[in-house]
Length: 178
Image (tube, rainbow, N blue to C red; front, side, top):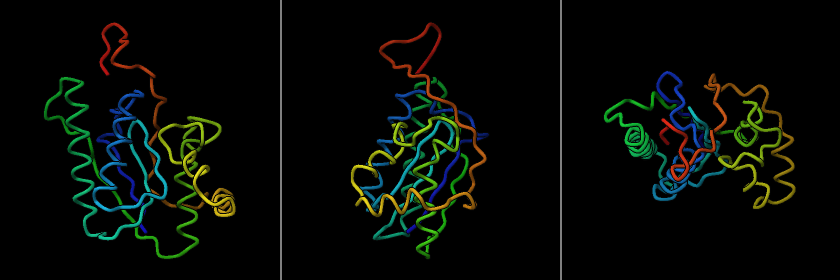
């Protein structure tokens, strides 16, 4: 089991619209499955993301991240007319070897939108696994994870994401790009 965090260059908000967050989320979910990573939790924001996952072949994580970052950077650069601009800065991964560490990271990722002040209820944030987890996990496991303390989790998370604009390419504000 691993936890992964990645951030954009200079913490810039490249994924600041619903459409861009949808794209990044779909890309992560699709590529994780293709690279045989089973996601347990994820949270996607305007300038970073976290996920907890287990893998059949953990050594392919760098390839997964490199491809994810490549396609998502190309997409936002196309949308912004900024070919070749660097979008992603770095990623950090940690192997989770203890049950308590795993449970605290699951809680942390599921509740991260609340920590960042984007929503009051993590299930209300559409680019996070909290609602999926509430629907699909066994009730007792869900309860255990959501009550598990995560206030002492030490992760790279000095990001302050912004709320997405809700803008879509079908309805543009004058002078805006999505």
